[in-house]
Amino acid sequence: MTGRIVKSWLRDLALFAFYAAILTACIPLRETLGLPCAAFEFALPAGHRQPDQPQGVCITPERVTLGRHLFYSSKLSGNQKQSCSSCHQQQSAFADQQARSRGSTGQLHARNTPGLANTVFFDSLTWNNPALKRFDNQALIPFFSEDTPTTIEELAITGSEYQIIGRLTTDPVLAGLFARSFPGRDITITTAALALATFQTTLLSWRSPYDLNRQSEAARQGETLFRSERLNCVACHSGPDFNRSSASGLQEFANVGLYNVLGRGDYPDQALHGAAAGRASQGLFLVTGNPADRGKYRTPGLRNLAYTAPYMHDGSVQSLPELIEILQAGGRRITGGPLRGDGRLNPNKDPRIRPFTLSWQEKQQLLAFLLSLSDPCFVADPAFSDPSRPLPSMPTDCPLP
Image (tube, rainbow, N blue to C red; front, top):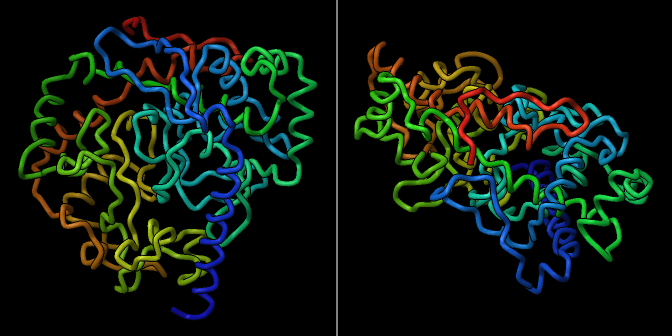
């Protein structure tokens, strides 16, 4: 590495350490002591897997209501131009159909906005930092993220914390919700993050055709292919949300051969490849410093793919047919430009990513299966919608819990 690259990497590592210190300091005493929370009744049918109370997050109906209001409130951004919902939009399964989103100050993010369905069941909450496991801690990242070679200002509240608290305190609706949610406690950024965490915990998707046994025959044939030894998709996409390794049962971080910049094993990295890479980095390597982790990102779940295009950590795959072609080839070859290279030959590529052959009909069947994992009830559920707007109408065949 050159001195410039090392300096950039150390700066980013120091920023992660700074965030960790903030997060630790902000954990409320009650949650730190692990005091019990009353059971929360999730809107789920009998027999469905039930979420546990997330670590450090005491869910109550009052906090969920507050969190929903805050999620859609632009008062949480420094310049009042964005809310959480600006990038996490319900109609897009709480993604946003952009390759990479922009922060409140106009900066372009390095990564694609992930959807929020069923995140309460996830082992980690971001594309490339396995340490972020708590919803309330993760909420602080968009609050305080800064302009660095690999991060952007998102809600950008650094230096404006008291101004934000003043907005929340003087809003009669929000102030009343805070009082009912956190009786005897001041309105703080920490309590706002806890409320956002409780709302996010309730974003549960369970009414797709796959869940309700309403798949087409083509989708059923596609599921057989998906689980077959020939394709072996379940090696990485196993479990109820299709985001766990079938071997370990855990969410893992993998290099799937999307890039091999100039044949050097690199993923796009601003320090190495300049403006062409934007603010991109090499995934898990940014956190661990282990060269074997270059290009590793968290394996995403496959629910609600019909609403969350474009795909992959950087939104560089525009459609599911394109994604199937890349995986069928065992990686992606980029033939021109500064990021050219054959991802199929990336030395860090996960060995589970290997070529396979599909007929045209089999591709349609696999596509039908992937689309059957999408939940039209989730993206129109009034319980998750903007409380300041008219309630959406769910499809008439959505079952009740």
